[in-house]
Length: 217
Image (cartoon, rainbow, N blue to C red; front, top):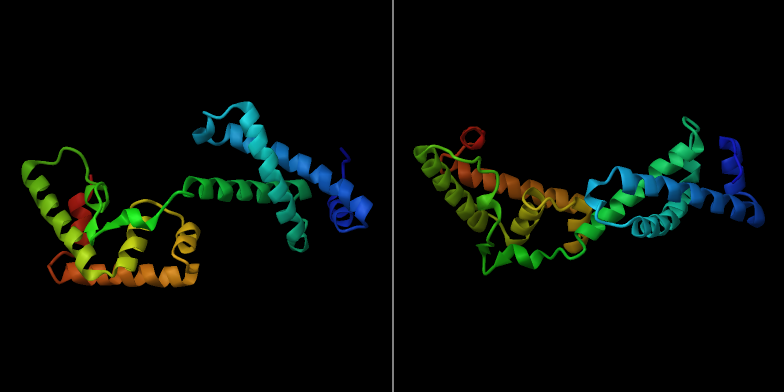
């Protein structure tokens, strides 16, 4: 594999077809090694995959990463080694792809059922263990009010977005795709949902500070 300077990488990747083809293959192999290292050494959630499976994943991801690097070639400013810059892009491609794979079966339908909260949703989240009986009763009462507020104050679309992001941790880009919208529109939807929820709860005397103090460890 040829060793190239930053300038040579850029020139070769944007050069005539034969020169470009050799540089692209060199780049793909380098990115594949970098992605494999990331998958095998830095992702504890992938330890159940065999080395062969990780190699295949790295090979597939390297194809996309190579295309991404070439598409962004004009943005390379030479502040680091070209291969370091390209590997950072490759790792971002891997992270994005793995995130999408994690949520590929995510459905908004599981978040609502005839307007009611589904089991295991927000009412059971973030409650510290073993509060005193009085504290537990107070928390349960507040959680019921939050449950009611979520169903009464928000539209179904606002509810789905807020629960998906705040409770299930669905990435915004995945949720925007599932909801057939864009990030800006989703930001506004979430902002409006939080504002309406806060207003509804404050009308019942439940301030944000009070609830934060109530549920802190």
